[in-house]
Length: 317
Image (cartoon, rainbow, N blue to C red):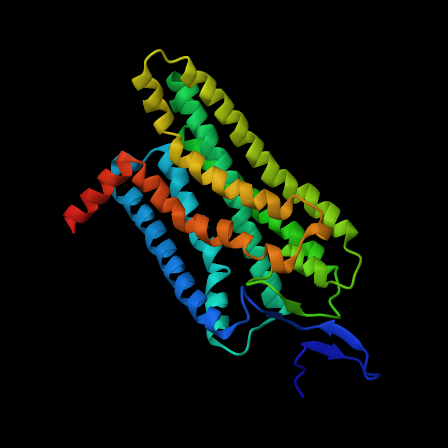
C-alpha cells in the first residue's frame, strides 16, 4: 500500500526515511493556483522566447561578436536552464492533485537550480569586469578581454557554479528526512530542506554559508569594486556627453545586478533559523523567475546594438 506521507516504514511501525516530498507551491487555494498557473506560464514563455531571441541575434549579427555579448549569450543559456529547473514542475503541480516529487528528483532539481544560480552570479561579476576593462582600460581592452580570456572566464564560471552545487548536493546526502515531508515552496531549495531534516544540520549550514557565500559574495564584491572604479573613471571625463555615453554602457547590467544580488543574498547569506517557508517562498520568484525573464528586456531595450540586430533579423524574415 502506498504511503501518502512518502515514508518507508520499519516493521515496528516507526517512521524511517522519507522517499518523496510534497511541493505546496505559492498557494494552496484552488482559485489562486489557476491564476498563478496563467501568470507563470506567460513568464516562462517570455523567458524562453526572450533569451532564445538574444542567442539567435548574437549568432546572426557579426557586430555582436564581442566579449560583452559573448557573456550575454552565456547568461541567456543560464537563464533558460535556471527557469526550466523549477517552473515546468511547478506548472504541472498547479494542474495536478499529485504534488509529490521523489527524493532523487528533489535533489536533482535543487542541484540544477543552485548550479544555474551560482553560474549567473559569476557571470554577472565577469560582465562587470568586462565593463571595467572597457571603460578604465580602453587601450588594453583587446588584450584584457581577448577571445581566449573570455573563453577561460566563461568556462571558470560554469565550472565553479557546477562544483559549488555539487558540494551542496553532497552535503544533502548526509542528511536524513524522517518526519514532515511537506515543502511549503514551489521547488526544492536548501533552506526548506534543512528545516525538514531530522539530522543535525549545523555542519551543512556552516559549509553552505562558507562555500555558497564565497560564490555569491565573491561575485558581488567583484561587481562592486568594478563599478567603483568605473564611476571614478567616468567622473574624470570632462564632457557631460562623454560621461553619459560611458555610463549608458553599464546601466542595463547594473539594473540586472541590483535586482539579482539583492534578493539572493537575503535568501542564502543568513542563519537558517531566521528562514520561514511561509514568508520567504516568494523571494526566489524574483531571482529565479522574474530576473531571467527581465534580462533580455533590460539588455535589449537599453542597447542600440541589440535593437539594431533585432530590426535586421526582422527585416530578413
